Amino acid sequence: MQQNEVSELMDVIRTSNDIDASALNGKRGSIDEVDRFGRTALFYAVGYGKELIVRTLVNAGADPYRKDLYGVSPWSLAHHLRRRKRVIEALSRTSTVIITPH
Image: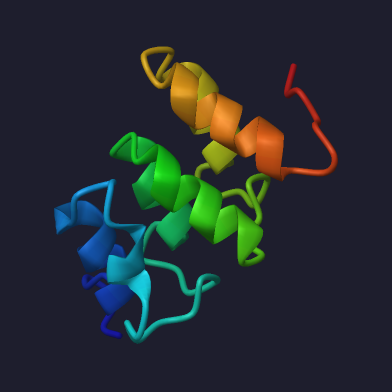
């Protein structure tokens, strides 16, 4: 993956319907792969408000507390974008440890 590109997995998240989380199956790219800003696929799912994909990624081992180059995590992004209440709930239900950033 080139520095200015996103992985195939990230691109599918941006363009797929949230209802079809199965669209992630078989896509190349690790859930831990990062873009040029240090953001993983989970950042994209949170940013686009795709609750089912968030749940799928976290259940597959994506870290909701991993920070990007700016010190932002998917968890803090979800809280910052308050309109994403269902995404926050998805992160909360699938995470075993909840750490609320101050």
